[in-house]
Image 1 (cartoon, rainbow, N blue to C red):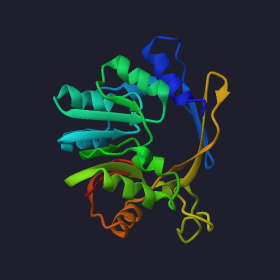
Image 2 (cartoon, rainbow, N blue to C red):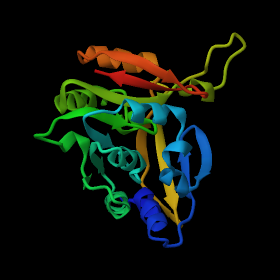
Image 3 (cartoon, helix red, strand yellow):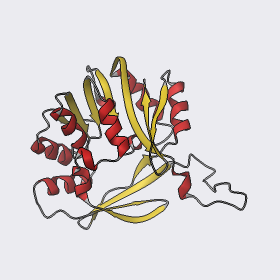
Image 4 (cartoon, rainbow, N blue to C red):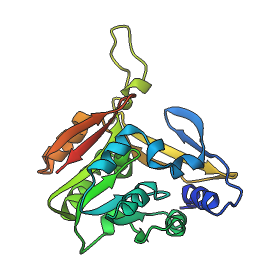
Length: 232
């Protein structure tokens, strides 16, 4: 991993001539993303993220924390926050921003800790990668959740990105789940190896939760096929 996403975050934090990130998927063209979006304040966040932060309580784990904006907000509210990401550069930026407990950590390798709230935001299902891997992640998340704890996770139903036939049916791939994408990230003339990234519609997430002896409820729907769910 070249850690280009993290490099962009760290460049922005240290004023090292940050540039836009360029992301591309197997079903969409290249799209530019300004890194400052990852440094947004609570007031600048989408309502789904705001709602998740308002519901967060107890000891909190922020999975895939990126630039650490969610964790910083909660820390400033006096909550106990652990922020993890697989990006060393992003975690360095989080520490520079003042996050007290920011770690380079893969959620699947986390041991001997329990949390009351686990956050997976900005398409939190993305880190599952594929539908087949979802159960492994849900079981891991369940294992680090305190009794009466909660997982707050958001995603989008990307069915709208596919063409429709004359009868209105969507023309999705027949050989897999349509939310399974591959992502490519480029930054400062470098390109990261392509990686899997999963978008899940709510019903599919709910079914996966139930299959792993977890409950799932819809908390809030966004303006564009996105939603926030609570798993417990």
